[in-house]
Length: 413
Length: 98
Ligand SMILES: Cc1cc2nc3c(=O)[nH]c(=O)nc-3n(C[C@H](O)[C@H](O)[C@H](O)COP(=O)(O)OP(=O)(O)OC[C@H]3O[C@@H](n4cnc5c(N)ncnc54)[C@H](O)[C@@H]3O)c2cc1C
Image (tube, rainbow over all chains, first blue to last red; front, side, top):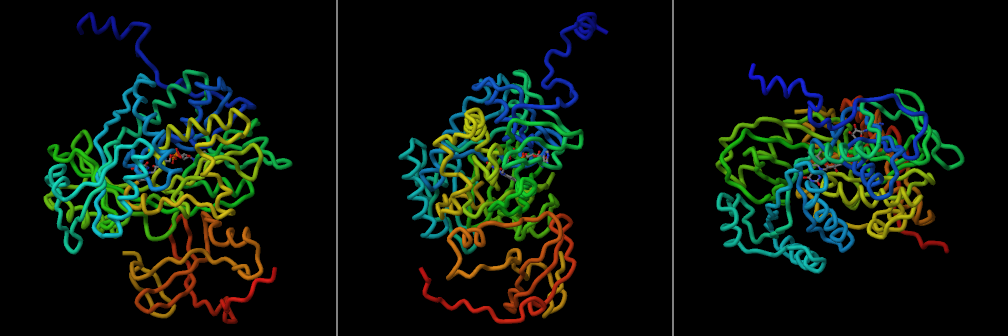
């Protein structure tokens, strides 16, 4: 064996960097307990440590880090929503994403390719005009483009799929993707470095509520006291809320996706069509990712179904006919927490020191940084809800003040 | 293809059916508070386990009830709503008493 290599192997600084410290025993008590070790829970922990110097924090994850929807999502990042509340909120997230690799000193492979959404009906064209204007108003880069411009942008796209010819497109230059696992791990690593404890294989089984406050959480590894707690458990939001004694305006639906074997690069932007219930993008490795609409009925199960795969492939090859020859490599699903208005639920709950990071449905990956940052601000201030997320409070349903993003969400994620 | 047993039409592909949401008692819209109405319309038990829910067979517009396990996706039983609803529910608009 070459001597240089042996010397390196025996050196005390090898391996150079350990991302997460080895697991330890749970402490009897923490200032903040975060339930759910997906991107959202980890981001809250990171921003608590970074900006508020709160490090007596435990993130409890029942399985492995980021193995929930964080690892299952198709990583569309965009801010071209419809409402001013939504656009303002998601634009802040896009800005944070742009600098995330530098901030972590860890490559999250943020890649700004632009997102193209197709209109096949006059009604959609009208809603695109509105979205383009709202976006520009808040500084986003979004324009309406015509068929010729679409053809130049994506030469391989079929502009006349069956009975649904493409009329126009919404071209969102800020649209991007990032490596989802790297986002979760970047937050985890930086949070752990600042003293946050991350406990995998630690499931919260019961919440101890006394006099309208949460005092402890019971886990498979024992009971721990907490000053306050946050739930960030995506598809299982209603299950935990029930343990806290309240209901949510959430229904859990599976969302499925799939990916082909790698092919030569042919597609730079992310392309989406809500009329065809399909969006298509090519990863930096060359694989083609297909995503679509939610399953037709609620379920807490990540199984895949032939029906959804069939309809997704049928739409996918309407858009890109030559993909009919591509071979599928993988398929999967995640359980998503859908709200009636397609907007998230952040902030206070009926329990005084128990906070909600929920209702992320099929669109929450892109919000990971800004949700983490604003939720951390709220936790640090003892429950003062930052202005940016006030429109997304749970109370909006009882007050009939929904933030309707349905049209800007379906099949675009 | 998953099969659902329609109480009217027998076993059919599940793609012939539309899911209609969990069975829950409706408060009287003319007398309940806005909050009670919001709770009925937007909130959900979203139980992970056996639930009773509405389904419709699209081709025959027939509404019925099913007991289904929302974790295993097993359909335990389907039955006609008459088992639960003995009387017709009227949706006639009454003047709200203020
Ligand atoms: C197929 C698919 C495609 C998607 N595409 C996009 C997209 O393109 N763009 C986008 O922005 N969003 C997308 N989403 C949505 C996005 O994935 C989610 O909104 C987001 O990842 C939610 O992050 P999270 O950290 O809240 O949840 P998760 O990553 O699901 O983390 C929650 C964690 O909580 C844990 N947990 C649950 N119960 C307990 C308990 N009792 N105790 C301890 N731990 C518990 C789970 O194991 C899980 O790891 C997609 C989702 C799916 C399924």
